Length: 83
Image (tube, rainbow, N blue to C red; front, side, top):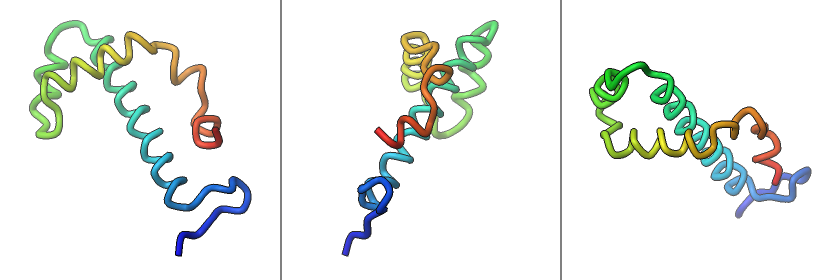
């Protein structure tokens, strides 16, 4: 049985999926911002030491940040979850 949130009309599973998606988008944006603000490629080298990040993904995070550099400043987490 899938439970529903009465205020949003969404299933709790859908709310959980949407929340995780928002958090991943924010994480990727902030990683891209950190890389964009780095003075040299040291940020890439440091980040690739983590087992979850390879250079290709880091490059995508950087491109995502450059494309949507004002994204987090202009969109609140609450508006993403509710729409």
